[in-house]
Amino acid sequence: MVLRTVTAAVLVLIVLAAVFSPYPGVLIGLVSLVSVLGAMEVGRLTGTTGFGPVIGTLALGTLHFLRPGVFLEPWVPVLVSVAGILAAYFACFSTSKPSKEALSFLAAGWVAAPLFALAEWSLSRQPVGQAIIPCVPVWVGDTAAIFVGRAFGKRPLAPKLSPKKTVEGSIGNLLGCLVGGVAMAMAFGHPWWRGLLVGLAAGTLGQMGDLFESALKRKVGVKDSGTLLPGHGGVLDRIDSLLFTIPFALLAFV
Image (tube, rainbow, N blue to C red; front, top):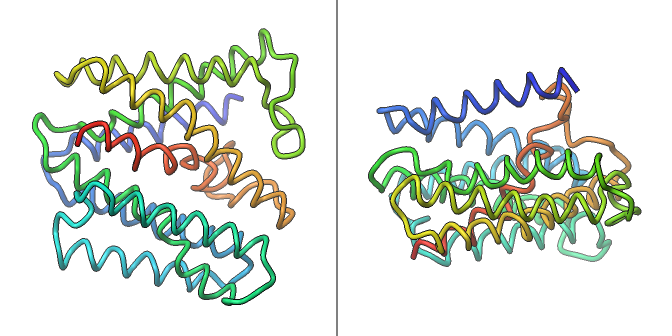
């Protein structure tokens, strides 16, 4: 638990430093790095070499640089993310064509599109730092789920996918996300109801993202998506909830 807490604290500091940096390249650089690392883990989960999703991520990154603002179009990150999620699912659970390599290429959208969309959205707004608006509800919700689950958890939420998760912890997660969403929206001068929508996305879709990755890991027989982050596993293990949350949370600000 101590190792997990220390790692989480370091990651939060890195994210905050990039988000509030006066140099846009810092945030874009972090997003690009996380996208590539996440894509490599997608390759592992989909049973490919990892080059497919990495190339897919680089293609999305190139699109970002060739046409700045493309991920600010409201439905672009949503459609690309959904396509990536479906591709990752079928790469793991389907034996029919198209090939796993082709699907893993498309699966890059699951990771890269939300992250690039969040970075572009944040860099286009004042005051700076608004990328943390969908992040903080996820962090607060995860923390609330741990404490509520340990104190009151009795009923399993999805025992076949994630045995440690409970219904009580899930409710704590949702409430924490709602509080975090409203607090972040108001802190940046947005109406409280926008934050409520972000919190709702984090508390529902975020938990779905966590269970989705758990299903993929169980299918391929691995405990974690990687070993990069001590106490957490891989990059996807840390951002799976956020990836499902971002595209739909940003729709609250359209």
